[in-house]
Amino acid sequence: MTVTLTFGPDVEAGLLVKAHARGMELQEFVQEIIEHEALPCSPESDLKPRQEAVRRMIEFREKHQLDLGAPITRAMLHEEHRF
Picture (cartoon, one colour):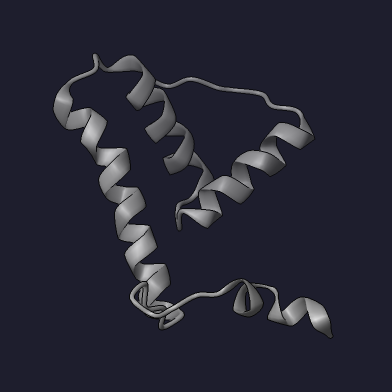
């Protein structure tokens, strides 16, 4: 099925930002949203967004070389605000 959607500039800009944040093209992102809403819920479909979120957190941790086992103190969290 082919559908044409018309969005205002603000909505389009917001969708583009969200699509690019997920590494997707706008059309792919919008199609994923619509397919997710159209399909009946199942336990497997509920897991997919969570698995994707965990994957993105792991990638972030590896990219920034974070170690959740390292001690984090209030002073360390606010260190950059002192300058």
